[in-house]
Image (cartoon, rainbow, N blue to C red):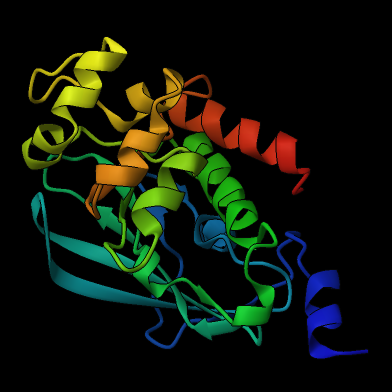
Length: 230
């Protein structure tokens, strides 16, 4: 059986993951809850992978300096390690930050729903553990992260420079042209997502895990059900 056939059969999420704790970081708590046993879920780590846990101090983030729990996943089907960071933000909120630039499947395993399945496991665990959101830096052109991530539930306010490019088409579609008032999800829900595909760009996007009925969670559920991924 080929590596590809083996890998496809192994994409399950039961926690059969090798945990490596090189810095003696475990156990890890959020508040008073030990989340050590759920790190594989927060990493979106599939069976047969290795999850390495490290702690990084004074990481620079959009919210200021923060300590980070870094989750690095390796597997034969990954071209590079899959990275997640759990940040304890100074405001006291918890964020699970996904660096999508560090999620590279080998070419023969792409476009098979593996990334979506990883995100589904991650989002469900983040919601259960009362995280607010998952944040991703959606890759810019020529990569397609800025097109792909919203289809899975990531959202963002459309930046003024992009709004300017699509202004006339927004007017024709009867959509708001007020800067700061239109989101990518508005384009998607109004069947005008082609405007984002035409004029959009890489940016910081957020996946709302605060409620099961959020746009992000509903959007991901729709994609999963349609594609029968899990």
